Amino acid sequence: MTTTYDLAIIGSGPGGYVGAIRAAQLGMKVVIIEREKLGGICLNWGCIPTKALLRTSEIYHYMTHAAQYGLIAEKPGFDLAQVVDRSRKVAGQLNAGVTHLMKNNKVDVVHGVAAITGKGKIGVESDDDKTTEIAARTIMIATGARARDLPFAKADGERIWTYRHAMVPREMPTKLLVIGSGAIGVEFASFYSDMGAEVTIVEMLDRILPVEDEDVSAFMHKALKKQGMDIRTGAGVEKLESSKSGVKATINPGSGSGAGDAKGKSTTEDFSHVIVAIGIVPNTEDIGLEKLGIKTGKGHIETDGYGRTNVEGILAIGDVTGAPWLAHKASHEGVIAVEKLAGEDVHPFDKSNIPGCTYSRPQVASVGLTEAKAKEAGHEVKVGNFPFIGNGKAIALGDPEGFVKTVFDAKTGELLGAHMIGAEVTELIQGYVVARQLETTEEDLMHTVFAHPTLSEMMHESVLDAYGRAIHY
Image (tube, rainbow, N blue to C red):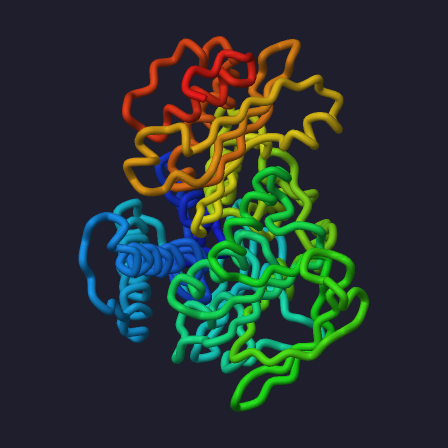
């Protein structure tokens, strides 16, 4: 007899596997279907292994600047193969961890390519071309997304890379072109620059990290240029020609930063490698959406605040449902969707409280509205800023570059947004995320005691500054 599951989840990324665990906790019979490795892109080819690489480049940066700390480290070097191997071992360890979690929570795992064949039915094709039929009362689509290719130059894994290729390089780039300056592009630019590559970033929009607050983008632009990167905004790549020896890139500088006398004139330049980081494409093909009439918009599956699609019995979460394309967003969506399915009293998903992090050097983190977006939304704002150079812990660490910015509603004291750039801000941001979740006002934050000496004291000072009460600057 065929087992009928309460919930079948297609995709085991941070949305799928977390949703599966929560469903099992709530007493559901769950199966998860994965075509590659448990943990999805994030764990195996995204969030985790990239942070392992960035940790290596951070340590290497400190080794090459050891003298600033009174230390002697003569001629530090690295073994690229071992750098990559460490990153892959970290991913492998966590993949094994997810496998263990599935067993502990009695979640069945089926490997293969899944497609919804009818109401409550899924066909799974395995590597040996056998098809397994799965029946489920509810199906959750958590198939994620993949890197977007340039239409005129597909990634070849040799000279033209996506993020997957950039994580397992067989050779170190000497002159690297990064197309796109979102979080992925800037993180890889930071990693390869710190490891010794000459890096050029090309961004079509008028500033790098375009979703961040303008002050953060401007600071990052200066910081990366100071590190030796060539940054060109308002520019575009028109053509890539790959050969065994490198890549010829035709770049139109537009009218943005770095255009100089070449405004509007395309130039051809030589690079050893190119990383394409221009966004993602949702994995919605060949999974049966059309057969059931599941609505999509710009390729993404449309859902309500509980992960429900327009078709009863079909849920969708994570990157396949649209921005922001973040692992923690997918995980939270998975929990909310499952709890609503189980009849729990849950609030619909609120995207405004999702933090965003970029793990470059310097790091960037934010939550809520930028100053510009807050004003566009009609808020009268109070804005606070506090620089790293005013913080004792930052100076002691040798990382005094950066700032913390807070945006408040002038009438209500609501924390509308927080924006940070500098050392360890990806850890600090959660303080503001919790504050927004609890609907904390400026008065609550002002009367909160922050430990000394810590970087978190800057968060307090930024709040104080918004109301003319900053102490240390």
